[in-house]
Length: 206
Image (cartoon, rainbow, N blue to C red):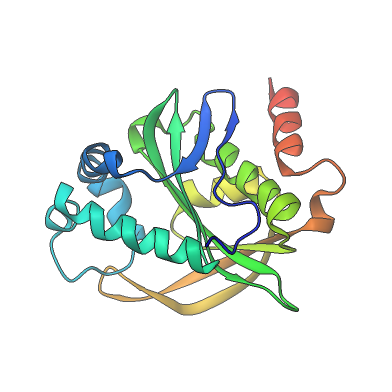
């Protein structure tokens, strides 16, 4: 039984979509992950095996089971990011906490070959709005390495608040790496939502 309000769900804004993972995503997931080793590996948790081995097609079924198990338990909202219908990345709201906190952490990545098209900020804005409106969360946090300028630009474009510096926060690339903490709450984007703010910023920049 799914315990998370508002899940599963498919969302779309123009050519950008968010949808649950499917078993038939295995080949596309493997191709995109393998093709993006240089783009993604510097920012992801230290892995015990080589990148290409970790992202073989055979690795997708256990990943899918883990994501679905987390979604059923109400601690994850795991989406595939699509662009014009094709597999373009992943976005997950994880560590979903209820009670007094009502919060989650967002993690995302997008195929580097599609960079510069506004996919990541659009996807994150959709996910945050859905978390606030339908899932019942109050706060979403994003933690990013200071050197990861591409990811920092995503949250800065959306106007997320920089809240702190976390020394030796996650083990990445063989060592403990510092991260910058960003966050957004329901009050920050009321009454129209984060996606509306992102649309307006795009119009004003043209």
